[in-house]
Each structure stands twice: as structure tokens, then as C-alpha cells.
Image (cartoon, rainbow, N blue to C red; front, side, top):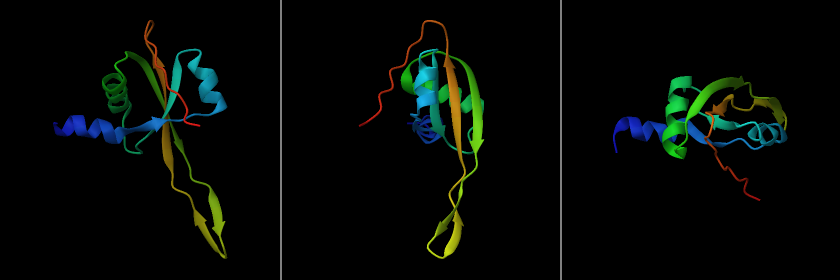
Length: 99
């Protein structure tokens, strides 16, 4: 496995399953948790290779971690990134949520 193939497994962490993401999958848009440093081109190549589909468009969102209190101490959750991937006409992706 080359380094670029190995990088693909570190770019896409998995599907991001929410009500909004599930309703978007009806219009061929799927949401994924991705690496914070991943570019749109890397995300597109990773999704196309890992799921064997054609990607038409990628939109990314940097999500800021919430400020939380852990006992008497104040802390912050990690920042993370999600990507909305629109598949090309004729491509389908079946991502099932684990119960």
C-alpha cells in the first residue's frame, strides 16, 4: 500500500448520521466526518476510491468544539471537520447507521 492510499484511510473517518444528513441522502448528498487538515480534493479522491462512486461536489464545514465544564475545570471539546459530498448522477451510496 502506497503512502497516498494509506492517507485515504486517515482522511475520511466515517459517515456523520443526523436527521439533516439522512434527509440529504435522499437528494444524493452524504455527510462524512473528515480529518481537520484534509482538502476538498483529498476528500473527493478518498470517497471515490473507498466507496467506488463518482463525486460531483464537496463542501466542507469546520465545526468548533463546545466549551464544557469538567467538574470544577473549564475545558473545550476538539474542533472537527465535516464534509457534505454530492454524488454524480447515477451514483448511489448506501450508508447504514449502527444501532
